[in-house]
Image: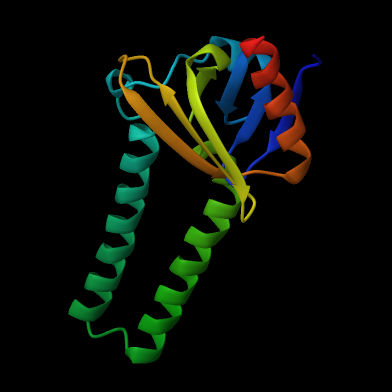
Length: 156
């Protein structure tokens, strides 16, 4: 079975004969280094979250100082909020793949595969903590045969 990767809404799905890999870049080095999903992994985006909160606080301070000095009116406040919203949306669009999860699901640990229903696959599996887990994601239709082939090969 050949290695393939497919773009998801957030991140990428890499597929080979060993399992499914959810990555941010689609890069096979990142996929092969990924750990199994577990609760021990902790927050992967803590740095980005802190930066986002700081940016929001700075924007809020600008609005607050504008109101305190009576230098702003309703129109300028709306413009500032609209520009901030556009900036957040643009940043999200540019970095949307960076918000994707990074973990792997070996085919040997998959309990059930449901779908594709409404272009979504749901995978029930045993995670790295030896507990039943589930992930559901919108999948490109061309990825489904590769996922099913890998699962069939792993199950013999």
